[in-house]
Amino acid sequence: MNEYPLYPELPDAGKEEAQALIDGFKKKLVDAAQEAIGILYTDVVVHIESDSWMNYRNEMMEGFKDYNNRKVQGEFDFKAIRKQIYKDFRADIINDLNQDMVDEIQALKTQLEIERNFNRERY
Image 1 (cartoon, rainbow, N blue to C red):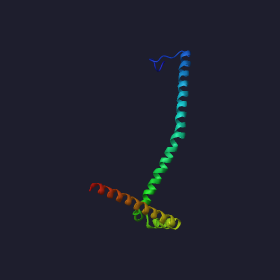
Image 2: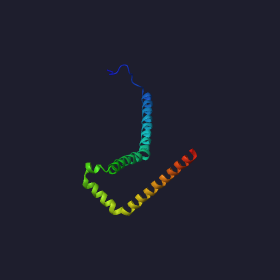
Image 3: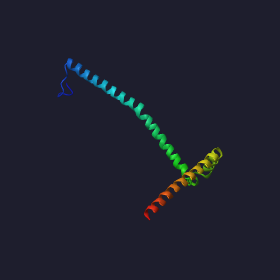
Image 4: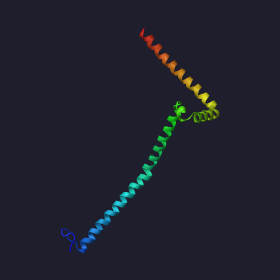
């Protein structure tokens, strides 16, 4: 007795043709999957890793930049970090702070000159 009477059996030639279509579809599907996986590994994963690392780095930097976090995260950790940075980079920090001041003075001089010129032309 036929379990599915509305679906007749295919003749042998039809079965072979159907199987060939299915096999062709499988091959195309495998090829497409391999291409997609290849693109994922070569083009996408690199960005996922770098984005994750960048997000992690940014979170760490935000934590360090907010000096008030020393009260939340632990006075000891920030003291150790501060001490080591100061010990290893004292001269660089002083030079950077001095250069920051020079840059700020130059910006203020430029702003002052603009204001003076504006006032001269106005009166």
